[in-house]
Image 1 (cartoon, helix red, strand yellow):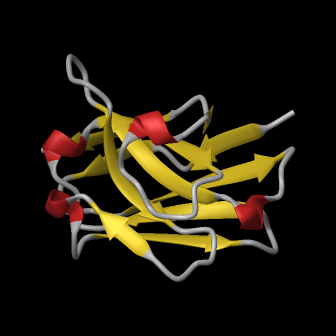
Image 2 (cartoon, one colour):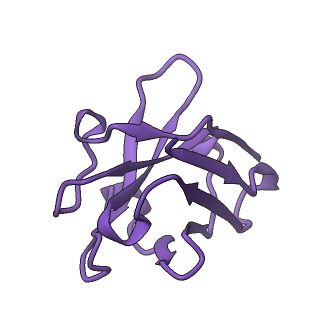
Length: 124
C-alpha cells in the first residue's frame, strides 16, 4: 500500500523558517517524481515545488523561488521542503504527492498518490 506521511507543520512567525518532511512507503521511492502542494482556506490546491525522480530537476512556483528548497533522500524514502522567509499568505495545508512521470510538474492532476497533509500557519 502506497503511503505518504507529512510532518513538520506548525505555527511560525512571518519571516521564520520551517522544514516539512514526507515519509514514503509501499513503492520504489527513487523511481517517482515527487511534489509539494498547498491549499489555503477558501482557495484551490496549488503546486509549490517538484523534484524529478532522477534528482536532477527541480521546479518551483514563482512566488516561492529563492525562499523554498525541495530535496529528497532516496536512502531514507523521504522528501523535504525547506521554507524560509515565510509570509502570512503561505498559511495552508501542505501535501506531498508522488507520480511515476519522469518530469517535474506542479499540476495536481499528474499525481496519483497523496499524503493527508500538514497544517502550516504563518502569523503576522
